[in-house]
Length: 374
Ligand SMILES: [Zn+2]
Image (cartoon, rainbow, N blue to C red; front, top):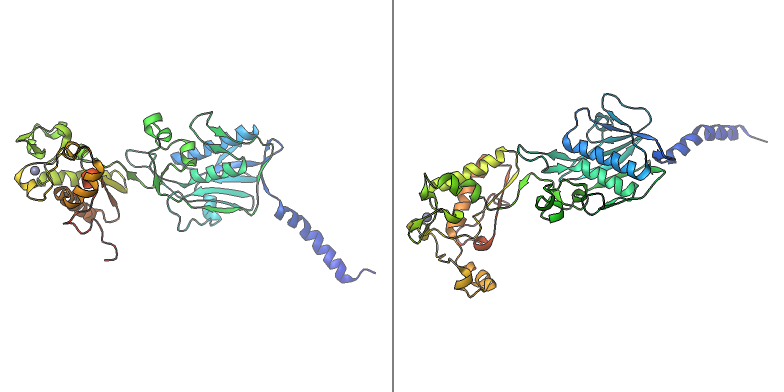
């Protein structure tokens, strides 16, 4: 005999069974070589969200042979959706990116929507590839997981991926990917030395060639701030006095002249005004000291040709001689430039180049920049 409570259970089971099935069902992207989802992007799409979307569509098509349809925020499609970047759906579904930094990103499914979104804060007045590109990172992670994609080198022979007739993601997917490094560049295959595409390629992003802060690395800022070609004719006094002459050759500067300091400060400000958050500061390559009385009075650094003076023993010079006699004139100048720069730009960062003669700490300057804990 079937009791009333059994009918209730059967009824509830019939109601909930399809829901249970659909709850466990993955979100289809490609189903039997047909598009089962559409891609959605913001109405106003920035350069790198556009690029991330192009990569997504390109590699899904390479893997499955199917090109996913593309929609914008003002025309939300029915069915399954891959939302790329900061669409209105991100706000509507309250997809949190709290405490995200660098290129952090999130891959999360809510209902029939897969969100691929990250921290995006890129572009300066001069360079469109610096800064955070978290949405690109989200697309990279998704392709790595869904079609087993790997990128080694830029170009058609540098990538690997699986051929798929079905692509789907778990309907409870929620991955937050944190980037370990804020900044990592200088690998030739990904930077401008080889391809004139510093960090722009998919393979660069996939291999942590990272530029998630708006930084100007390098460090030999004297060439740009007080350039010989620009200033020497009118102001030879800006340049180092060497053997009784100022020639401008090698872009060696007089470290004591206040006009030189002001030009360095102006240069740092100009770089911050371009939209950079970190700007480097450092002397020219192959530093030679100015021999004017004012410069020579600031330290006991009297080296000129360390290679010959120390019989080619770089290690001996660096580790034994230099620590006792750092070029204080340079370090004091850099301290003044940093203090002035950060007074106007308290939230920005100056990267001080510690290189060759400035590799060791000053005996005069106790700290550079903001003092930690005080
Ligand atoms: Zn001088």
